[in-house]
Length: 313
Image (cartoon, rainbow, N blue to C red; front, side, top):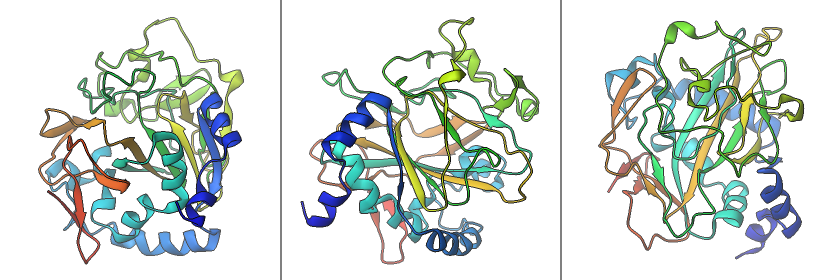
């Protein structure tokens, strides 16, 4: 491990904090002006989906959340981002030396948009009912994925920043084998404990193991972040987001990169993603090896081309 890697890895105290509370950060990945400049360039490139791995009608229309998936496989800046040592070294401190980035997602929140429901994700079967990641049986103390959520714009309580309930990552309050009902007409309509919240057309409360249980929001903390800052957390941590109040005209934009060890099976026994009212083929999909090696060979890997695009092999 070189000097830069040692500088980016979590210290023993930081690792203990992460294990206790389920998240670490925020930490700086880019300078504020650097991030703002990069986003000005990238927002135009995002309109070109000619090289995107999902060419299905659902993704091309942009009317489903699937259209925000895995743009790191066709956009060079995002490909560099998921392999940024300021991120990968911290993730590897927790997951070990052999790490895949298996999914990325943009999370835009426009003025007036609702907040996101309190939720946890272990197998990511929450929308489709089918596990998208499966950890090996011998590693029963782990589950879920490490998400690194990077603020591309200002993220605060007015624009809809993330919220966490620290220490809730080791016990699941939801049963992801259940199915949620997709209802796009419910978006921006539901008041939950005094806050407008939803889950991209779903109601995450349908997955609760105990229908009468409610999250203890008195323990929630807001993740206020400047452009270029990131936060890493277990997907099993109780998390949500505030609504965008509309007091600022700026969209809040987060980019989430999701990481697992190479021992984890990604999209096992499936050829497509079906959720959020859409369906896309995984024919061109591949996970990205961001650190170490892959001795398991469970998953198709994406190889980067000289143009910064990727293809699965």
